[in-house]
Length: 248
Image (cartoon, rainbow, N blue to C red; front, top):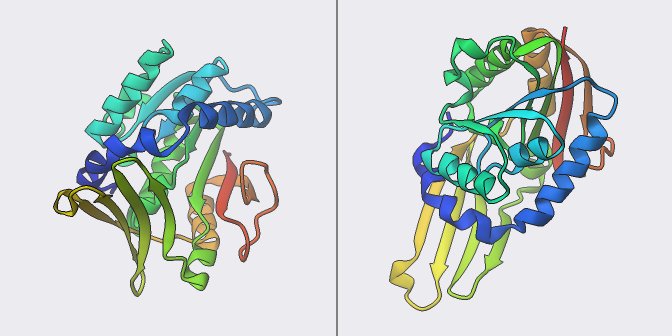
C-alpha cells in the first residue's frame, strides 16, 4: 500500500514544486475532451493526493469523491478545494479500504500521479477488483502510471529537481532486482544538517502485467496512450502509460 509516512513527510513540498493552477487548467481541458461523448456525472479520484484531479473534475461540473490514505494529502486537498470553493468529499482511505457503501456508485474512476506503483502485485490485483465493484455497469476507469519499461531499460535514475531559494530538491530512483526505491532529497542550502531524505518502495508494473490484471477483473475495450495528448503508447519512448478501460 501507499507509504503514508513518506507522503505525509513530503506533502509540504508539493505545492512549491508544481504550478498548481497551470496543471489544473491542463487537466480540466484533458477531462473535457475525454468525457465529451460519455454520460459521466460521478467520479472517484483514487489516490487524490493534493486534489489536482478532483478539482479539475469538479471544475467541469462532475460530482467527485477523492480517496487517499495520507492524512496530510487529504488535508492539503481540502485546503486546495477551499481556495476555489469546490464541493468535494475527501476520504482518508486507500483503494482497498474504500467502504462497501460506494459499490456501484461511480460512472468513472481515475487514478493519476503514479498511485498504482505503490501497490505490490497482489494488492494491485485486488485493487482492480475493488475498482470494478465501485463502478456502475459500463463505467470507465482511467489510470496513469509511469512507463517503467523505459525507465528500467534506460536506468533513468534522476526524475527531477527543484531549485528553491533555501533548498534544492532532488527526486531519484534506486533500482533493485524486482522493485525500486523512490527517493526524495531536500538539501538545505544554508545548513546541510537540516536537510531531509525520505524514500518509499515502488513496484514498476508494466503494460502487459497491468493489462492481464484488468482483463481478469472484468474490464474490456482497453486503450493505451503515452500522454495526456492521447498519443499512441510506445514502450521505448513514452514517458507515461495512460490506460482507458471499461466495466463490462
